[in-house]
Every structure is written in C-alpha cells, then in structure tokens.
Amino acid sequence: MANRIIFRLNERSFGAQVLILAFLIILGGLLAISLGSILGLLFGGMKTLSLLAVPDFSNPKTVWMMKFFQIISQLGIFVFPAFAYAYLYQKDYNEFLGIKQLPPLKNLMIALVAISLSLPFIGLLVEWNQALVLPDFLSGVEEWMRNKEAEAKQMTEIFLRADTLTALLVNFLMIGFLAGLGEELLFRGTLQNMIFRKFRNPHLAIWLAAIIFSAFHLQFFGFLPRMILGAIFGYIYFWTNNLWIPIGMHTLFNSITVFGAYLYQHNIIRTDTDELGTSHNTLIIAGSLLLMLLSLSYFYFRAKENSKQEKDTV
Image 1 (cartoon, one colour):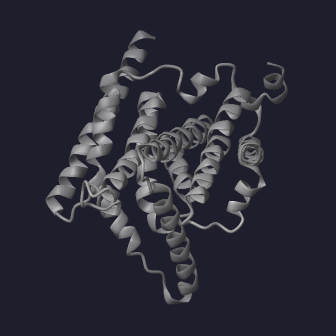
Image 2 (cartoon, rainbow, N blue to C red; image 1 turned 60 degrees about the vertical axis):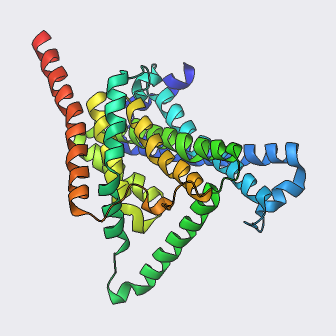
C-alpha cells in the first residue's frame, strides 16, 4: 500500500504515466534476462548459456534454450509491467486490467467464432501488406524492412518446430497462451486503458494502442493485419470491459498457427501455416468479413443496451 501512496500514479500527468510504463517494460526486460541467465547457469551451466552466443539453429538444445528465454522475456516485458502499473494505479488492480471476473461462456464463444471467421479477411490484408513497394529513393529502407521481415519469419519457423507432443505444448504455451495473455495485458489492459482514461475517446485509445501494438513487433510487412487485429481486440475489450475475451481471441488466433504448423510438419494436413484459413475466393473473403462483423456487432449492441439500462437506473 505504501508504494501506491508514494506513486499516486492515477494523479500524475499522462507523460509521467507513459514514462513509468516504459520504465517498467525496460525493468521487466532486464529482470527477465537476469532471471533467465541465473536459471540457465543453475540448471545447465555456462555451457548451456554459451549456446546463445553464436546460435546454431540446427542444434535442438539451442532452440530449447531460445524458447526458454522467450517465455521468460514474455513474462518480464509484457506481464510484469502490466501488473506493476495497475498495482501502482489503483487498489483493485485486477479491476483496472479487466481480469477480475471471467466472462460468460456465451460471450467468449461468440468472440472465438468471430476471430476464427476473420482468417480469410486477415489473409487478404497480409497479401496487401506484403505487396507494399516503397518509392525508389526509399529502396534502402525497403531492403532493411524486408531483411527484418525475413529474420522474423525465420525465427517464427524455428520456434514452431515441434517433433514431439511436449514441444507442441511448449509452443502453445509460448506462442499461443503467453503471447495472447501478455500482449493483451500490456497493450489493451494497460496502454489502451491508460489512453482512454486520459482522453475519454475510445476510438483514439483503441487505434493508438493497436498501432503501437503492431509497431512493437517490428514486422513491417505484417503491420496492417496486426493493427486491424489489435483494433478488433481493443473494441471487444471496450465493449465488454473484460480482458479475458480478447485474451481468448488472441490465444486462439496464435494457436491456430501453432497446431497448424504441427499438423503440417507431421504430414497430417497439406496446408502450410502461411495459408491456414486463407482464401483467394472473393465471395469467401467477403463472407468472412461480413460474418465477423455480424459476430462483433453482438458485443456492440450489448454494450449499448447495458449503457442505456445504467442511464435509466440513474
């Protein structure tokens, strides 16, 4: 309680709140590196840590070590700052983040159906974004962007490798659940929440948080679809005031790739992860968008109805 009184984060300027959140993210990253290194030394010794000095991606031990550090980093960079910020902002930090209560099962299922239906439309956005060509005078910038994209894709392919069920479950934990949990806690539960409380404009808060969320990944040829997904998660969070729903949506979206990659690697399906759920049929894409919007509209009208009932009660 003393820390909360000293900081009085809810009474500080917006600029100070942004700086404190940035500090918590950096602190969380440093703590994650330190904790990961200590645990690596305790359980594997210096020889295990040295695997990361010059990574050999063909060495399974190196990949496992990278996955270990990735999991620790997600906890440090996303989960820790969100809870620390909320703790310093108000007494009931679970309420601030929107995780105090589990959502009704019906609402969660409708949201999961909506994000599943979005796949063909999101696939179209990916194609549009990857077709981006910068002017000639920015050719050097475009080359750098494409190199960063190639590096990110290589790392994703490495992380998605799963020869065993244990590896598959670790991938689900790392790419599916923890990424969905941590990123929603930070970008929706904390950042979007912080912007909205300052400016009282939900659209500004949702889209600004979505832009920052997409930019944070440093994957420029996937910026558009990731931003749209961030906005979808943001509107759902705003309409329901329950972060568990976008967490579930985000987790499902990521997990489709995780389990799809596993099935593809083991020749159970013939569709590569980049093509999962996508289509080049205009009617399917249009239907995907329409059905997704219809599903999402359920939350919009429920929010309007709840708001009207609250006004009538007052």
